[in-house]
Image (cartoon, rainbow, N blue to C red; front, top):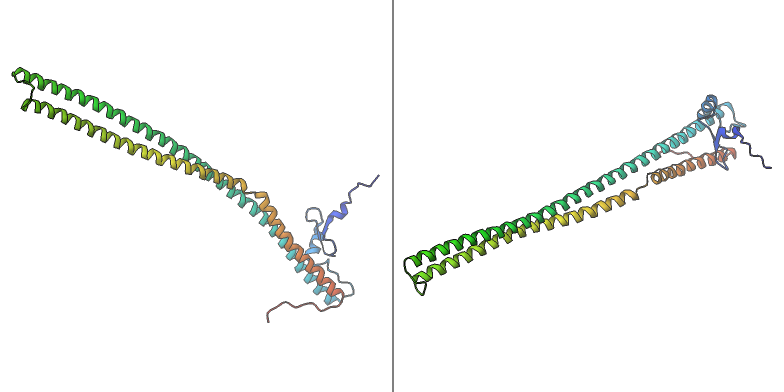
Length: 258
C-alpha cells in the first residue's frame, strides 16, 4: 500500500523546479521565516566573506520583494479583471433589458397608431353618412319648394339648381374621404415607423444579450493570472541564472544608464 500521508513541512515553502529559490507559505509559516525571507537570508552565501554575504543578502531581499510585489499585484490585477468583466457583463445585460423595453413600447405605439387610423376611417364614414343625409334633406326640401310653386323639374333653371346641389354633395363627399384617407395614412405611416423601431430595438437587445453571454469574468481573471505567472516565472528564472553565474564566479551583468 502506498504511503498517502501528507508532509506538511514541505508545504511551508513554495519553489520552482530547477531553482534553489523558495518562498515561505505566508499563511502557515512562522513570522521569523517570513522575516528572514524578506531580509534575503535565503541567499546562497557559502564561501563568501561577511561583506559579500551582506551584499548577497541585500540583493536577494530586493529580488524577493520584487517577486512578492509581482505576485500580489498579479492577484490584484486578476480580481480587477474579474470585476471589470463582471461590470461589462452587467452593463450589456442592462442595455439588453433597455432595448427590449423600448421594443415593447414601440410595438404598443404601433398598435395604437393602427387603432387611431381605424378610428379616423370610421369617423370619416360617419361624417360622410351625416353629410349625405343632410344633403338629401336639403335636396328634398328644394324639390318640394319648387314643386309647390308649380315649377316642373324639366330643363331649365329649376333642374340646374337640383343638379348643382348634387354636384356640391359629391364634391364635399370626395373632400371628406380624401381628408380621412390622408389622416389615416399618416397614422399608419407612423405605426410603420414604430414597427421598424421595435424591430431594430429587438435586434439590439439580442446583440447586447449575446455580448453579455460572451463575456467571461473567470476567463478574464485566468488570463490576467497567466500573464502574472509568466512575469513571475521570468523573474524566477533570472534569479536562478544570476545564482548560477555567481556560483561559477562569472561576472554579474551591470544594468544601468550609459
